[in-house]
Image (tube, rainbow, N blue to C red; front, top):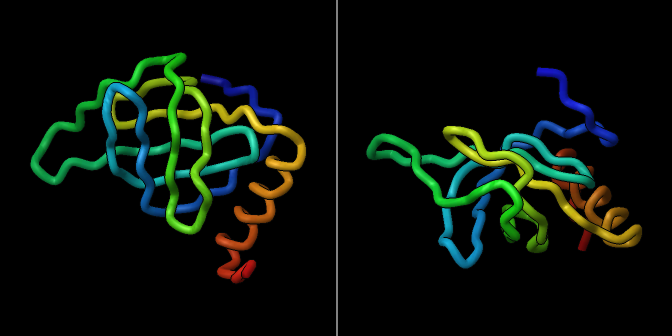
Length: 108
């Protein structure tokens, strides 16, 4: 399947959590850009299940990042893709954080 993205995604493996009113799931961030992220859920005891559906509002918490709000753009058997709806300044800050985390630079 061809995917149309207006931002290049940075491969970045980090612990992450997704939550909304339906529940919360922990997993691994696969990739991220200023417009969205891919997350894979983990379940050490077997099958991965989650209650998130396309269009759901969601908050993503990623190690090294401030929480990011968005919506589920796609559900996968083992995870989700999330679309962020950020303003210009929030996008710039997220890009700076992505680059700092990817290059192991402390922004503080």
